[in-house]
Image 1 (tube, rainbow, N blue to C red):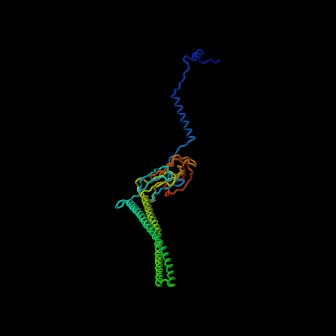
Image 2: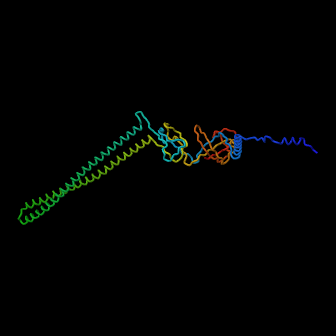
Image 3: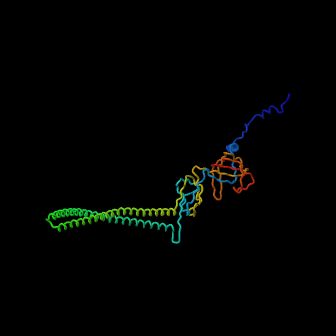
Length: 366
């Protein structure tokens, strides 16, 4: 029979608890720290499963608009008087972009101002000539009208005299015929009959003279009427000539003013991509002023990078920020998607890339 190592009384005394069980309490600081650490671990696990991280690399490339770019050029030499442009500004067709002033100075002052004064003086002179032509034409028309009225009155009087003279001729013929009959019967002397025939001839001569005078007066009347018509035609011709010269001078004046100050306007709707001038800057003809991207146009970035930096970029990978520097000016493609990625052979002289490593061509579209 196996006997226990300790007596039953000792074991019973040991199992009896006089103070109860000892428990460890948990504080709220410990609980919060535990939850925080668990959240960090879960976030790291979730990020490693669902997300990635960006790797920065400096590469060479260029930005090209998919719809091309509108270049705003200076129409002639001058100075930028006012600039309404800024990069990123939305413009519409016809909006004024800038004002170019082309004032030039010579030894005796501003040449353009002198040309303007000369043109204005010539216009004023022609207007005075136009008034003089109108006044002279009116005076001439008045004189011709008075002459026509006088000629008509004289012609009317002459017609009356002709009527009376015809009556006298007829009367003289009747008297001469009766005297001739009486002379045949011996009741009247032949001398008296001859005198009566002379009276007939005299009256006929007066009638012929009056008829010639009437024909001359008719010619004068026709001449006056023709002069009236010619005067009106000449007046219209002179007025048209002077008015045409005035319009030509006005056109020259407008062109002169246009050359002094030219407003350059937008040729299409779009967004200003670059501004290459400043207020007060001198310009030459066909100098590039700004670039405008067409409305709804997108930018495409073509990059050439070492193959080791291409990483996990594949077609459709989203690019959140891209900055490409060209000289001292930067163009930013804020977001885009890679359209293609494949090896390419790049010459260093063309793309300013000097690297013995294989290069990859990356096309990004905004």
